[in-house]
Image (cartoon, rainbow, N blue to C red; front, side, top):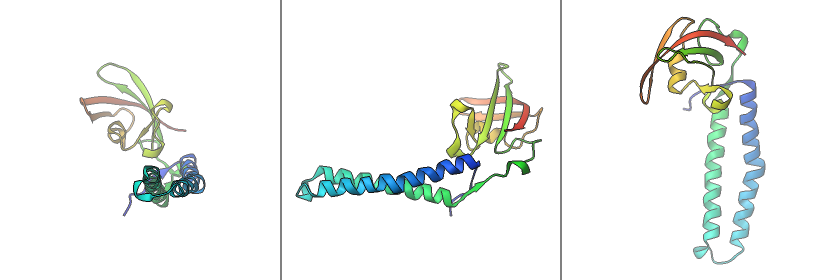
Length: 158
């Protein structure tokens, strides 16, 4: 059984749009490429045909994975979230205890993560380490190069 994923309305719509793009535009293109390659003759020595079939297989795997994710996707009702703890969709301002640097992140589902936009996945080491903490808590987070300590300064919702 697949794991349930939580999304914002916007994130779920992006996922639906990607599935629609792949099934209605990319899938017919892949079929057409196979047809063109098949028309070029002997299939046993046709590298173009083999490449087109492989590309179609990869596309179908991607579609199946996205459809499975979509089937198990749930929209988060932000109005029902507790703002006293760090949860999915929390925007959290943290301070690195060792160097005093402050950072602000919004915790989102893995597929919505985008570091340039300040969105980190709840499955990332920092995301996991912050979940459940309250303002004033010190989160000790294991990262690839050791353990980091972050103080939770502020929790808000968008």
